[in-house]
Image (cartoon, rainbow, N blue to C red; front, side, top):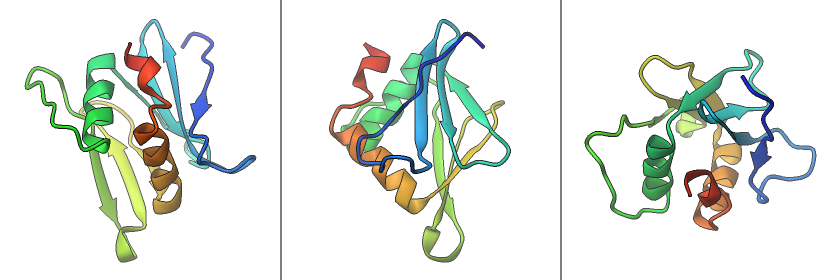
Length: 114
């Protein structure tokens, strides 16, 4: 992968593990800094845009765009997994995911799909 500049939500505290996003010529990359496996999900700008719209609760769905799927597990849905067909699954916890979603809703990641 090309050298990437990773960005996390401003709602994630300084020095805390968080969901990070980066862009390279090969796509949009998403990881969780606390993931011991170091999984990096790589997707298209269109699929990432669809994820942003769904997290902002804006209706937008392109049936040609492969979807990124968000699932929860564990007691009280504390584990959050982000995955797409043929890519590694990024795993985080509810607190870190919520910080990412707050950043999404504040428009902090919109430039990745511009």
